[in-house]
Structures are given as C-alpha cells and as structure tokens.
Image (cartoon, rainbow, N blue to C red):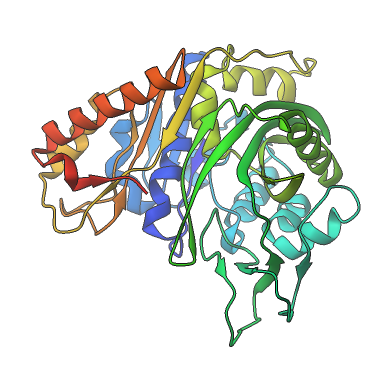
Length: 374
C-alpha cells in the first residue's frame, strides 16, 4: 500500500489523500492481508493512524519492495507523474498493481487528452485548448489538476499554458465509484459531491452516498462508458455534472475520496473484492449498499493553537478519518480535516457529524466556531 505525497500538492488536499490511504489500509487489514505502507516524509508522524503491519516512513519504495509484496494499491496523485512513476517501478519489480497501466494514467492525468479520447463516447461540456469569446460562463482548469485545485471562472487576460477552457454547465455535482477489470466493470455507487464556489474558485467539501436523482442511472451509464472507453483497471472515480442532462467531467484512475464514504455502506470489504476480482480472477460481484454515508471536510480557522498530542488523539474519535496537517501544533489558516459517518437516514448521519465535531472541539479545547464548514 503506497501513500506518496507530492511536494507540489497543496496542504489543503492532504487530509483527503490520507483519508483514502487510511480507509484502504483498514480494509486490507480487516480482510486478513498483511499490509505494508510507504509514507512520504511529510506524513511520518501519522503512521500510528494506520492499521498496517509494516510502516516504511520514507519516500523511496525500494525497502518496501524488498518485503516482496504480492500486490499493491497506490494512493498517489496523477499530478507531476507520481502515480505513473510509482506504477512503472512496481511493475518493473514484478508486483501486481491494482490499477491501470502507465499509458491509461497518462491519458487520465491530462484533461485535454481525456476529453479527446472520449469525444463521441460520452456527453461532455464544450472544451478548448485556447480561450473562446463567448457570452456563456467559461471555466479555466489546470490540465493536470487534482480535485478542484486551480479551477475557476475564466477572466482575461489568459495564460493558456498548461490549462484547458470548458463551458460551465449549471447543475448538481456527482461522481461514481467503479471497479474495473481490463476495461470492463461495475458501478459501485453514485455519489453526490459537495462543491462550493467562493469568489469564483471551486472547492471540494465532501461526498454523500447514495445520490438520489432522476438521472442517477444515466450518471452510472456515462461513468461506465467512460471507464470502459479508456480501458481502466482497478478502482476509479468519475466526476459528472447533472443538469437537464448528465455530463462527464473527468476520470480519476485511482481510489478517490468518495471511497471513504463507500466503505461505510458497501455490504462487502473493498479490499477483498479487489483482490478476488483483480488477482484471483473471480467474476464481478453484485454488491449492495445499506444506509447512507457522508464525508465532509471541515476546517480549523486561523490563529488557533493546539497541543500536537491532542491533534494525534483525534484518531480515537471514530468519525475522524484524517487530522489537519499541523506538525508544529499550529494549524495553518483553513487547515482541513476529514470526517466520515454513516447511518440509516441522512438526518441521523448529520446528527452523528455534529456530535463528532462537538467531541473535536472539546478535545482540542477550542470554541465550536473555531471549526467551519465550506
């Protein structure tokens, strides 16, 4: 299990990545597998949060490879080629990677290449490499951006290097979690995404499962066609916008934050399903969801000083899946953390979330207004 962290990735995205890593480590451990984790230097202090058999707290993979792992699931961003590079190294060492090959990762890592590869296969917003003079709102997106990083409404003058331009589609944000095997697969869940727009900037605030919408099946169909069209293998996530119709936005060739919510309601172990299908050759299972779940990304306001030991103790609160990044005990302004809860109804889940936040503020000895939602 690899948990790299690219030095160029914004610290605000760290809790999402760590929440994915922690969720999947726990799933593999519960399924009875021996788990090896590799953490980047910036994350060494979080090793105790992971239920792994072996922690390798350094950036290199060589020591982990000397343990001769049978298979690997990589939690790493496409940005900067990190996911592609780790995949290539593991394959050279003969390790079975529970994810796509380097060529597919390259395509998914570039929004323009993805757009071209799926043109005519799935409905997409109009997309250009250079700005267009149009009366409709236009978004500018980094071609290799992660999540909502760097997405904003376009306003001239433009620097067209390394970005794409895309028409803004009004509607609700959704995503799908999928399991693919050599280009064929199943949609595990359709999720509602909470995307907040502040001062023209886009920000991811969490996910909810399930997404009850008249176009839910249409979303699942588009997501599956996109993943099949690109030849995905392993777990992946597809982002969509649902308005009068559904539109494909992008494909993540890896585990996404929504898998944290999925693990709470899927009536099966995510790790065992992956190994059964991708390694042992079992047929794709028919999986069921039970109840509903939420993942939220609250933030600590600036100017708050807390004891680092208390930050570490947050892991004893069941709903906290990732802490804020504050190695010196002084969370940066807007430092996020990740909370995940599940229940029989959305109302009961929201009550759990509020209770969890009350536990957090009591433990850190700060006022409730020290924590804010996007």
